[in-house]
Image: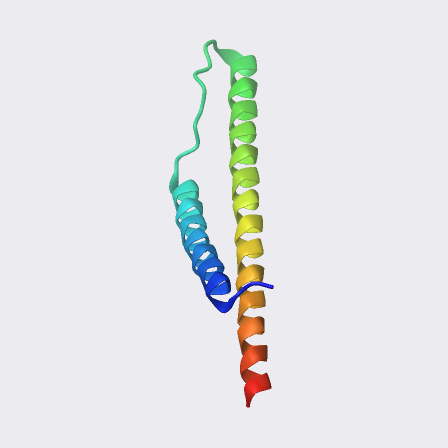
Length: 93
């Protein structure tokens, strides 16, 4: 069984992590897509450029999705802590 102090420490740590995840998500969404340099001309070069764009967009979407999952996990953890304290508060009334 964890003490109230340990639960509060974990709550603060989780809230800070949630803040960092939010900042990281904003940075990632504002970061321009990286594009490799494609040499050549014609239809093949156009297709290679489009393929690189799609790959870059998918990587960004995957990174954002991972951040959203971590954010959701932190939010659920904070909700659990809130539930613990609300339950404790109701029990003492």
